Image (cartoon, rainbow over all chains, first blue to last red; front, top):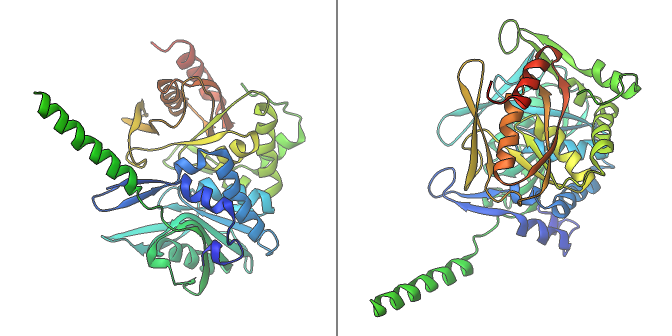
Length: 210
Length: 177
């Protein structure tokens, strides 16, 4: 569910968050319009607004654990955990966590990947919030939910800054609600058009004077 | 330097909350695991508060966190002191144009990257990571920030490995050795 349709309609902070995201075309591979949140966390006011919105939503839900998905989930989740008085647990790629872990694999476009969580990180019945910067197919979040449920926790909700179109219209992922602040930032086509037109005019000018 | 008083009760609680895992990631290494610190909301809060108390009046406008565990401590500090957060990442994770800095590992080398344009020349920066051992990663981080024209005020870590302190001193003060 999108924040603007669930209690935050017209909230100017959402527009600020949306505009703070940078789109990088063709990363990590051709055809992908990468939603870069580093420009968001580089803006203190917008970063604070992002955390404040999520803290306001979750502070009274009896959540005792905030799980962040490596690595960009680590940027947002601990600040939320600190504000709502919950523990923070990192969900990491294979081989990063020392000691006993449980693992959950999930599908990528090509091949598989794996998410791990410490044994004993959550207690049975604990209420958990899962955080990542972005949800696309939901594969990673699904793996996170499975890990936590295998350990006996109750996943209350997943929250992401950005939700891709595949998730639009799906309020739930594996039966769990997904809360999303903004849609993907569209490329600024006006800027591209002006840049292109200026290039054409300049080329014409140079040719005329050659 | 361990800048904080060892008898501050918050320090003792932080120290006690860290779990040591032998032989990880390889035999002979006593791994300092901060995930147990993060499981205690009060201790995690105290850790951040101690850093914020130290840095809030130092006009720091950039907190740079080293992937991945520096991403856990850096942002809460940045938020509390009014600074921007800049992630320093392993190769090919950051989209767009980046600065690169290689550094030595025990065997081989690794690389840290930062976005071009992440900060402006003259900004005062704090580097954050969970642990300092030889200081190789932190040195790479400082070079990246200095490349972009920042002034690195300090590096802050939750844990230091005292046995490697001499190496760190040498690297900082005699970089040609």
